[in-house]
Image (cartoon, rainbow, N blue to C red; front, side, top):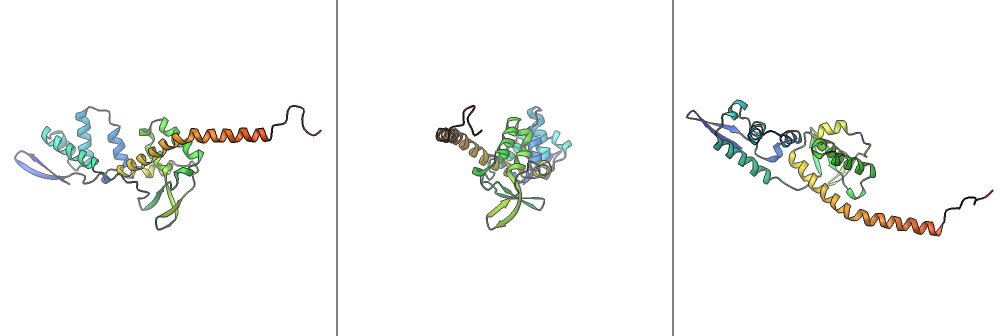
Length: 212
């Protein structure tokens, strides 16, 4: 997307991102964790999402700033919210967990810990659990690497994901978590009932019982 800046009677065109797909997770995190003033936030956003020289950004009129920030907001609102099950990062394919209903306790425990510690600080790690290298694929069906907890290197790769891919993945995952929160209590009650029934049918031996 082109933006025109008029300065000292001359108009020059600069490039602004044309889609939210152009924003990487790493860049998005830098912008979203910026705790500066709104003025500084606008300055950093324009500098990061366009090829306007930083020196010129500081000299933009408030009208130009408002127009550019408005375009950025429009692009963010227009982003594709559909989950991207297969993504490519630096030439390698990664698949979103194909069946969250079968997620392991280890996977969920790590995700839960990261969410509690602050998702803003652990976004690449969360993506590294949800997206893993594809080991086999046929048409739209695929399998991913099993989870071993070793995600440090993959988390660095996930920083190259687009912010759009990350946001759609998080929406899908949070919907699953909400559903899981509703199901889990009833599932636990079923398991407790089963255990109680099993114990009643096969009571534990009392102290002193057993073959001598």
